[in-house]
Image (cartoon, rainbow over all chains, first blue to last red; front, top):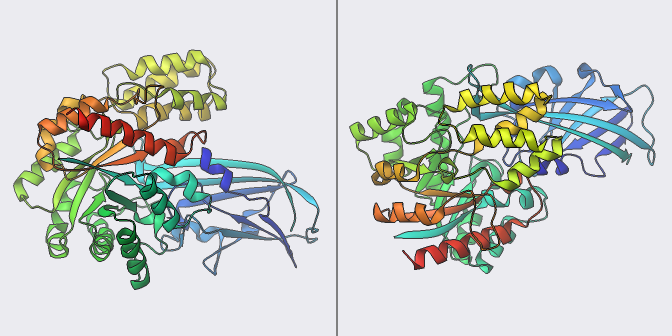
Length: 133
Length: 327
């Protein structure tokens, strides 16, 4: 939640694929973090996407949502984009507008807070109407 | 002698835009004459960090040479919570830091900034490794880690006992502030926080009670006024970012100080930093015979996009040069 949020989803973040769509995202911290420090949730036109359907692509590698907490060696560089790939019954239409709500949580691994000394949660939420590419 | 440097942390907002190359930001820092030293955060500026390829080594050294910057400090991160549900053990933390020491060695930085997320025992174990690499581990003292914090006292005791040149401190000036920056307080209003809640936050900040207690009192008092958890979370930043250690207390650790972080938030119309008393800070370190750099660290990217970070760092260097002239 801060000025760096504006880079999370660029105007061309939403793309149609053969089987659904994909969303390109950038981190909102100032430095690279691995996927183990990240969590996501996504709504398309107000409907929550089932997390089990989400594939996460980073550095050419592909993961399921459940794998995230263990991926402490898969770094997303701060200027690179990760991709969420989601299958839909009907592929999205290029040129159409879609409402996206993307919650992107970061667990900051070097700032420990609270009595249990847990990683600080840096939560961000982006709501944007995007034209599908 | 106190020398001036810039930390590339300052340009987070510009850097994340993707519109600048590493050369662009270093060139602009030179063009504006923002010091003779440069500080780089490994995980911010270097893809693949802590692995440093020969190509990256060549690029960084070329840029430092071309734009005439002395490499001052490379910033490591001590990510003990990287697995989220399981914290690193002492030995795992030691192993996590080693490649970052080697990165500093390879890139030619004499100091690796490290963090208090690792206890004294970790740095004690790393002494032989760091000595072999000839890299100083500078433990950053970022609020709430003031010189009298129990963990810092343990660190100081270990430093005295081991007595190695590779152990030192990097005090961050956000630890000894005189006020919560107005710009930070104003940014809270974007979440719907009221002037009354801000007044209460200020009042609690000035109390001489431990930080955890401040969080508790704030939650209770603004919560009763209808503040939501995200609003309270935002107001908590006032306590988590802004420390109140007396400036004079730094003199206790000046012999161990290897570098300084010149944190800043903004300036008044006279060019002074209303929330951090730099004239007094320079006086204390000068009188304690500190010999080293102070790096500009602009915190703007955490709360405002109103200013250009290069302009802000330039203003701080103008202030620092004025203070140095009158020392």
